[in-house]
Image (cartoon, rainbow, N blue to C red; front, side):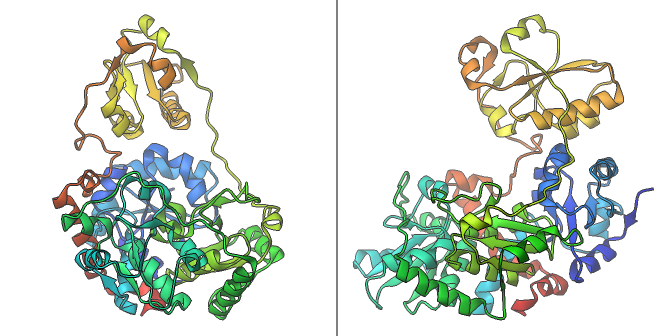
Length: 521
């Protein structure tokens, strides 16, 4: 028997002190068009593959919701098969949420984006406009411009004269650049959140220089018709000297006091072993070229963990352990922000060599089933068999096998004609193909599914099979995030809409939603 729960009950659960995973099983385009603030996206098309990474505790309260179309009931069964024992379904799906007069939020990473706006409001984080920064550059003022994004984003586009230093690394490395107490520091990202968090991080760390967030980041820069750089590779990656690291370490220990617990190896292992709570552990360093690597730990640079928390942490009010090289600065500043986001946070005070011995006890029940793989040369003997491409729609639109049709698991489940008993799936993700194969063979054990695993090298030798005409993205591609997406191509209207979306987020939040970030009240 399935457990249906009213929207009001779920709203109360989000605000109580018990862990909850509130999961949107609709596809990404549907999620980003509008979802409850604290829900996470695990689409039906890849649910079994990702749920155990995002929701590792099988006892946690799990609430599923869909478009009131029966998908949650299917996922309920799959979650049971994966040994989850405390599953609920939002009654009437997203319609039930709307009818209860609760807001929907478009876009992605909404809790983190909202948090950034609340931080600016709470702390009055200083900012500087693109025009003001440009003027300082012309006057050759003593300034440092640090781009708080990961290197791959920085390389795509950056403010002229800026240096890449992802947010969590800034308080650890910035002393290499500061010339004097008069040096002004500007932190930027592509929009607002990482600019605000990066600037406020330095202020909270006790840096006495003037510090600013660049208002609206690189988007604000090009909206003012200033030219962006592309392909730049300048990064701040020098490691401080030993005596400086010790000084920084003492500073962060004082900041963590009475706020975030510093734990040892045994305490970390005890948290990981406790099956009544959900515990995540992350290596929050950006540079992975260190002598010691945490091979078993998930690496998510601290700035990104704060910027896109719902991408990595699927359970609200859960426990989060963070670690770095032992300097504690990167882990500590990350933990302080996550603490404000209502997670129970801990910093591991151990050497990397010791940390890598932690037993993570990750129990994964999902298993792919055997797949019948074929090569491109086999297609000539299968010319009457329908070809369905389940790769990301963006890749499909650029290049595809001739006569293939884009689809995904949801579409196949809802629309596959009953008379079709054999298909070819084209994929670059075999587990996703395995899910579709399982679904089809559950309906009919004799269903024939052959899979072509996309191979660019092989494709080059069969150009007659390939269609490279550009296909326009539209609403039929339900795996794509359409939310102001053209800002990435320099569309000014989309950039303006995105920035307005960010600044308007806290206006849409109700009292309970703002109250979730209790330490900011």
